Length: 289
Image 1 (spheres, rainbow, N blue to C red):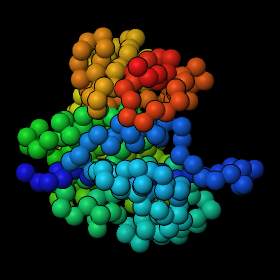
Image 2 (tube, one colour):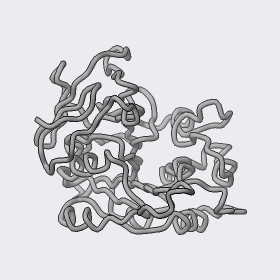
Image 3 (cartoon, rainbow, N blue to C red):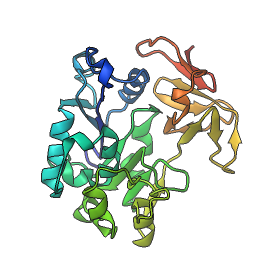
Image 4 (cartoon, one colour):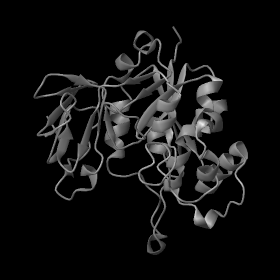
């Protein structure tokens, strides 16, 4: 077994509004809850590339599985350009959200940071993480080239690929990859493409008969939860206790809860952060026990 079977990457960049130039760059309110829940995992590494000052997190989590790398948004796009051979970059036209389209290329773009890992992937910070190490242990991954956080679909908020050349360059199997890579527009290439009229990664995986494992995760959308069994919406409460995330109504353990749109709902509140404390998450928000 590899010492570190998987490594996830987060590129997070705070783009200040024109009238907010005096305030420092910062992480969103939910970031502390994400990073603290993730820190309980040991073998599933996390590398964060950001333009936000993260000294407090570096000091706090220096002995954990989490690494922080300071980089400007311009330098990040420069790295992508150099690795992928992107032409005609006009940095003034590129927004941080465009990086979502480049997620399937991370195995190539960040190859130097991913040496020695069995799998590479990406994750968004708007999630509460459970015992990801258990869900991603080597025995559970045997025979799979792709692991995704969707129930029956490939997701952009969290996915992993086997760290082999074919998977690092799988994005090139899309006939539209050059168009996506060389455009400042967002195509949802890391998911299903929406209505953009492209062959996105979900279809690439299907067309190439890639073996994919779907993790037991939950997805929250404006106060409703998508049921893992019958795909219907239902009420929900999840408990995060000592690094494990459990559905209170069913008793089922899940790998993570994706907050999706609820995090922006004014009726969804985050109780003041408490380091390492157990908490619950429901339609009304996150509160400590």
